Length: 163
Image (cartoon, rainbow, N blue to C red):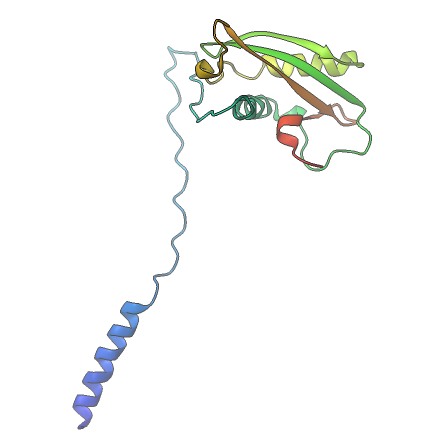
C-alpha cells in the first residue's frame, strides 16, 4: 500500500473512532426561576405535586413550613437530649387554606409559641388535599412534631429521617 492510501485509511479510521466515542457529559440545565406573581395579586399559588398518601402531603407541608422559617430551623443530627418536643395539630381545608392549628402535646410554652407561629407563617395556601379528604370531611387533619435543640431552633419529624 502506498503512503497516500495509508494516510487516507488512517484518516477514515480516526473519523470512525471519533464517531464511536461518547460525547462528554453535559452539565444539567440551570434551574429557571419563574416570574413573581403580579403585584395586584398578593395571594400565593400553592405548589402542585403528586400526593399519593397523607405521608406525601405531610412532606409538602413540612417543607413549606421549613422554607418559610429558615432562621428558626437547624439541620443535621438531632442532639441526644431534645430540650423541647411539640406536637401540633394542623387542619387544611380543600382549597389548601390553613383551617386550624393547635398544640396537641407540649411541656414548653416558648417552644409551643414558636411552633404555632412557624405554621402560621408558612405562607398558606398549601397544595389542595382534595383526594386525601375522607368522604364528607371538609378538612384534612394531621399532626406534625417539632423537635427543638437548645437554641430553640427546630426540625420537623416528617423531614428529619432516621437518626
